[in-house]
Image (tube, rainbow, N blue to C red):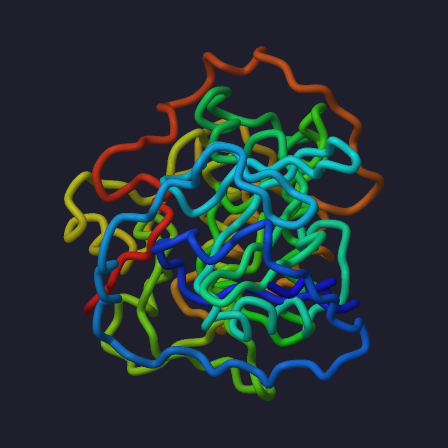
Length: 354
C-alpha cells in the first residue's frame, strides 16, 4: 500500500461506485511514501455515454471493527458503506475516509491536481492506495447545508448571503481552473466549523476536468431537482459551466424559499416544469435577492451569470454579515425541503433523457 501525500493542487473523484472489498487493506503491509513532486496524472476525459450507469455488482462490504490502515483506525461505515469514520492514531483526530476502487486513482486525484487549494473546497489530508482500493481521508464536518435548510426552512437573507457567497466562491474557483462540478446541490456543501458559518465543497466527486476552453458535455446525469432545462432538451451537448450555475441558482432559491423552485413527485411532471422554467419567489425577499435568483435560473444558458459574475452581484457585495443560527424564521416557509421519491438529494446520479 502506498501512502500518497496530496499534491499542492486539487482535483475530484470520478463516478461514485460501491466498495467491493476491504480485504486488500491490511496493517501488515508496508507503506511506501510517494514523492510530492512526482509527475501528475493525465487529465481525465468526460463521460459521453447517454446510457444509464451500470448497477453495482454487489452491495459494499462492511469494514470490520478497528481495521488498521497505516496510522488510521477505520471505524463504522457512513453513507451506505462508501465512507467510513476514521481515527488518526498519533493525534486522535477524526476523519472521514472515502473509499474508491484502486483502478480509479487517476480519476479520483486528477481534479485535485488541477485545482489549487481554496478555503471553500475540501481536499484530502492523505490518500492511501492499496492493490484494490484507494482511501482518501477528509477532515470531519459538522453537517451539510441540505440538512440545515430542512430543519430551519427558510434561511434569512443575511445568513443566506454569507453562505451563498462561499458557495459561489468555490464554484468560481473550480470553473476558473477548468473543472465542471456537474452534481451541485445543497448536500455537497458541508460546514467546516461547529458554529456552521464556514462552508466547503465536500469533495470533487463527479467533477469533469476540461482539456481546453470548450466546456460542452454530453452525459446527462444529474440530481432531478437541480437539473437544468438544457440537459432535458433534445440538444446533443450543453455548457457544463452554465449547468452548474443553474444548479447553484436552485440551491439559492431553496435556501431563501424553503422549497425547490420546481418540484413534483412524478419525474415526468417535474421535468416538464423545469423545461418551462416558470417559478414564483416567496414574498418578503429583497429586490436584490430576487434579482440574483432570476439571473441564475434563466432558461437560456447563455443569459445566466457566470460563476465569477455571481460574486460581483450587488446582493453579495460588502463585508460578510456576521450571524448566528437561530430558529426565528421557522414559521415563514411555504413548505420544508421535500424528501419524496425523485426529489431527495440522492448520493447516486439519475439518468435523464429528453
